[in-house]
Amino acid sequence: MSAPAQDPPRPAPVAGESPKGAFRFPKTRRIRDRRDYQRIQNRGVRLGASHFLVMAMRQPGPPQPARLGITASKKSGESVARSRIKRLVREAFRLNPGVFPDGWDFVVIAREGADQLALTEVVAQLRGALQKLHHGGGQRSQGGGGRGGPPRGKQPGPRKGGPPSGKTPREQGTPSS
Image (cartoon, rainbow, N blue to C red; front, top):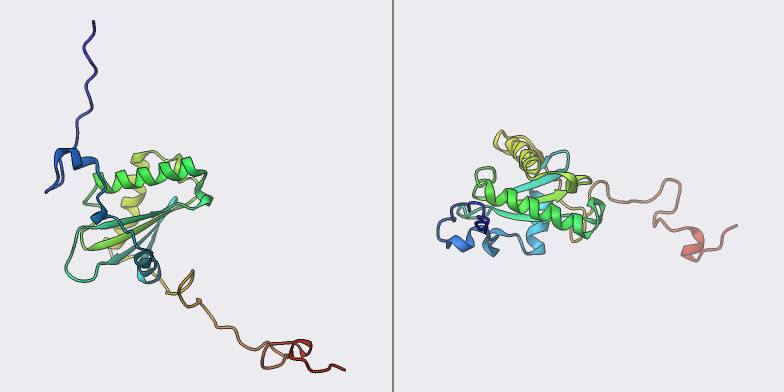
């Protein structure tokens, strides 16, 4: 008879968590509210990597543990691929607390091909993107866009050569010649 296989070593638990909770992603570390996602996406700093877009924003008030939100649209693959991406990003977040500093909220948006990455590649890409944050890089979000915010860019106005209302004479109810 052979000896039973041993489980791989478990990481040390986070302060205040039981050893069983070391593998958890507690609700206090998640961005769960749609308004929080929108706030970060509209006002945060954008940091790019080849397979991820990371948006970061300082938390209001005293620094709390870093929080993470993940978005993987259908562009990034089928449901199995999207779930795998989310698991890998959560694992990178959990295993690398130094990469995600406390006092910040992060939204990670997966791009096409992210489902093909190994965990080490995910960590390397997120670390590279977040180094820009530490060095003052990144692009400030312009605000608006998407649902729930004002549109970005130039506001629509009257068309050149057309009536001031933007409607054609037929739509205005005036007879045309």
